[in-house]
Image (tube, rainbow, N blue to C red; front, side, top):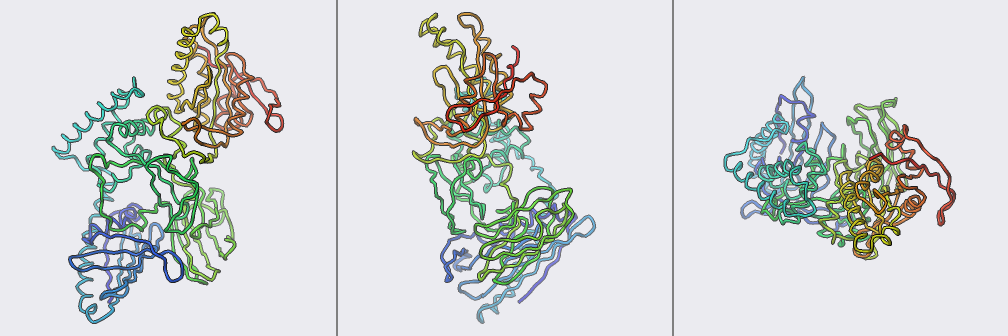
Length: 602
């Protein structure tokens, strides 16, 4: 039995798509029952997803294949029931531009298995029509609201105010946030409002950077508040390792629970955690009784894969043509579970089509450089087995708070010093900036002042550097005697902090006047691992940063030419007087170009 419904909405399909393609929300609005999922091995040895739903005494089970879609024009799925009165269900939604509005066409097909199915099919189709009307009206209202939150009720406003007060009290109790609470009141207030007004499903896995962007609030401040509230028992923190194929996360309660090999049952592949790429820090509001046991109405639609612009399952020998609008950037053709080839969309590109095919060994594309706009991508499956083909963003979303980001800020180091990796686990980081500072004349300081007074002076100098490093979104990893090792995700932040080290500690008086300091820095790949029960960093980048620091003079910052050549650094040192030299460091292959500059004046 087939049916087709059509609706017109006074919003563009680009604006309507995120809500229409949110299949979890659509199914909930339509009045469909919650769904539970399990993975099992199919007859062909491949994993398959089995979905189960109940309505009263009736239990329905079906195989949930991958959805097919093209943003923002098409969404479809074919479900095969395992038993019961129906055999298959087909749903296809198409969005067509109609002036400044959109025409949505929804086609369904329900194939009965037996006589009971033939009797029930018209009733089920009519139920679906009424549900679709409600769901799409809901989607239109959400699209028209365009993110505007409804005004809170009086009760919600009162609960929000009470929650904000509890949050501020928790922040005030954290010594690590001493002197910062006033600046964090705004983010705490915004977070309290979000927790009171947000949908329950959005509170089960909160992405701090995405939330900060939504609240139009500083990312670092929102993260600091959420870390402190986790310590205060208001939120739970988890370390999510994202599968590179399906992009679904696996959650771990503690950093030390991470392991070198993580198996994705959905894709049937094993992959490793990458500290600055696929390990994401998220939070939940479970301690507040929110976002707990949220019913799932659909878990495999486009809403769970926003980085996928088009997707289709191809049988052996079949092909597909996608037409998707792509802005400038880097994208990839992905063949699940673990193969992909990148292409670039550039303003200077000339072609607007890609023809490709893949076999068991390689993916071939006619071009890897195209122009922005609606891109026509044709792919053929030249293998002997079915395959899932996707057009995806090549990189993970920019709003991911990676483990490398979070562990490299001072608030995390202060609030969660016990969070370390498992013994022996080494995680690669593609790029980190390492800064070493050394107090000049400390030996004389101890001999002239005595151990206790000298230690107090050195500790005061550590406090000055800690505050400065935190201000520039870095963290102290450890102190070594009177030296400091600090880490920064952003090389520009590291440079701005480093040139201010000298004037910062210059306010501390030593035996012969203000303290003097020298600084060395370098950026590049390194290894995160556990050492002395703390999260530490090792590798050539770390060793070279330390050695560069040793050759700096009092009041100088020395950095590698490699780091100085970065655009974010080159612009900052262009107007500074530079001393350039090539130095052969012990244990480092080949001479290293080093640039020395004077630190900022007090």
